[in-house]
Image (cartoon, rainbow, N blue to C red; front, side):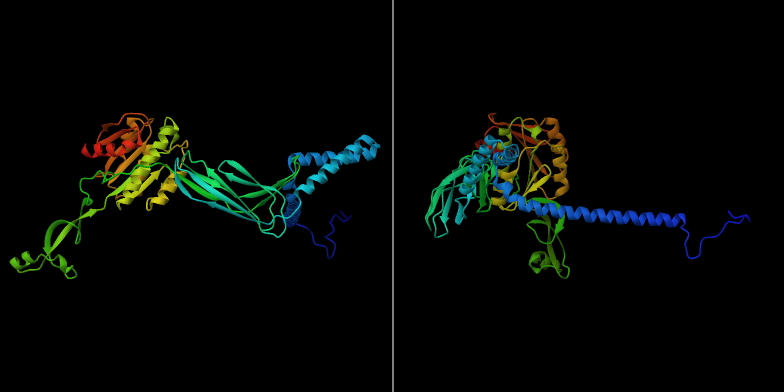
Length: 440
């Protein structure tokens, strides 16, 4: 403050910063700092990716044992030379020679033509599934021996390939286990060349992977066993239509009516054009509700029997050109073609789920309203209370039944409310069980 008590103003040409201006400047500096950090991080990721691309072939070639031997070799050279320790230098030389020999084993260019041929992509449980692996030397020079590795499901098959002259071929025939319903991934075929000590391993992929579908066993059902309907023409509704098979009444002719439906006898008697009207019938539509909840089955054999029953019903409905919908917990399977249905059944597995049978029935009721028959396929752990609750969720007018799969049990039938329940112990008993249900 000056002697006169008056504070001097700001110097000429210098702007005085306000708190708002300081805050804006601070924000701008923070944003510049963030942009700089983002740029630095992006550059670091780019450099790391470049280093990874360079190191990846080395990492894939060297086994864990090979990496350890390499590190020990480097340490032996450094310590031996720094400490003038002759024994370490000799060990380093021996390890270096070993690594060089291993490199010689895996050197060389692979020039193979490899064909993976599966005789059948779809088989039934227990059927024999075979494949062929054909390896040809596509070069004019001889190729050293190698090994072809073929992943089959969770395992891997190794086929030694001998030394092949230019244009030479080698063939291997293999079998695929089909003891259990599943989808087995076969391939890709990889050629492997490694040293005897397992330090280095060089791989090359020659084919894509293929899938083998192991379908569940099914039982051929004759006649109309899957419909359980007395009226094979369909289910009659209260809707009136001008064209169907179930005659309802006569009415006056209206312009645009099909003249084929004119009832000429009544027209001649009354002197006025009269046409026939019909009650609409709906085509039989089977809905199969298969529980995939692990808690509904005592053991895996029950589930496999249930899948076979589901496939048998679905295939028969497709064969009879009826509509069929197959529902499992949280999914709908393809019911429009036999191959797609069986492929889907090959994939499904038991899982612990929160959705119960009653939830599956509720989903079925919401999914479609044209079902004429609903069949529940369940295991022995489903209680009568659960079956009754699921049946209560079925729309009115739809015939409902349940098949409880219990391997080894005697064929039986009982009722829960208006729902018939079959106890099935063998897939071979399914036609007789359905006959009992129809007769009952």
